[in-house]
Image (tube, rainbow, N blue to C red; front, side, top):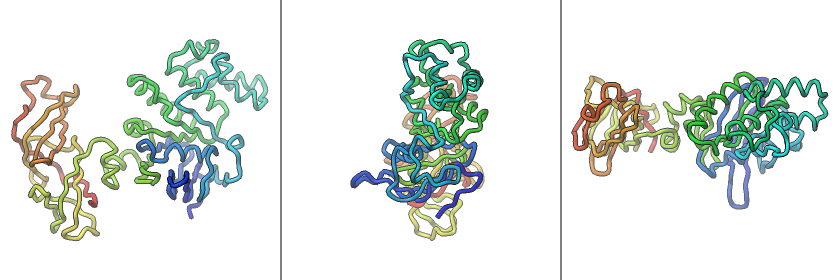
Length: 360
């Protein structure tokens, strides 16, 4: 059993939630620290929103316990939990002004008007909407409505703010802008944010730590750097960014790829000779056309190029149905004639520490 500490705001201990024959959350254990921007990341149906609803009290676990600020909330209804939620649909009151939307929760709790005025003013300053205090929600952009919903949730000073894909309805440029703003707001207020998303870029951009989930189970738990650079398994490697996964077999202190090449690799002690493995290499770690002592090297033919603006993506075939994706920054190749063309043969190399060995 896990135990709550003074630095833990939320603790899930062996939480399971079933809906008939479907296990939506499967023996989930994790702790979320005070003042942390924490993201739950995974595909649709992986259990992340159900977990959020369990923390909020809208769902009850079939097994396990939930602790908020060190206390079990098994018998605590949602309206008595010190949490607030921001959903993808902001559910603003159309008949109320921005000011009154933000003040709504404080007035229901019968907070004194001078205190309401002070706290609502501070929140509207924080989300840069004081000039829109008298506006109605329909007069605001999507990003402004999102900030009103955020201010309304934060003005009550919850211990935890739950965010269920709140940027999903925004266009790409605004969503990227709001990612930075959300992180800055979270740092300013110091409240624990628990953010649910299926967008790996959002999670990497904003989070202090990430829980990657699939089919109700926790796949990996760690910092964005740990999740990206050291994926725990093939699912995490494939879900977070782009990964090249090359099948092979352990051979002494190296891996023999199924294409025949023997490459140096950093192997875990538990991997015996003959063990089937996957060599995971990120596209940006590959060095095109440059051989270097000590690095892993393979040969291939470019079958496709994709111009991405800041970089060019090359798809390289090593053998029939065995391909690698490589990305090269367009620092010295701004013109088409300077970039490698389809049909070009080349070497691809990477340092052993950049080849993550995963059990097959």
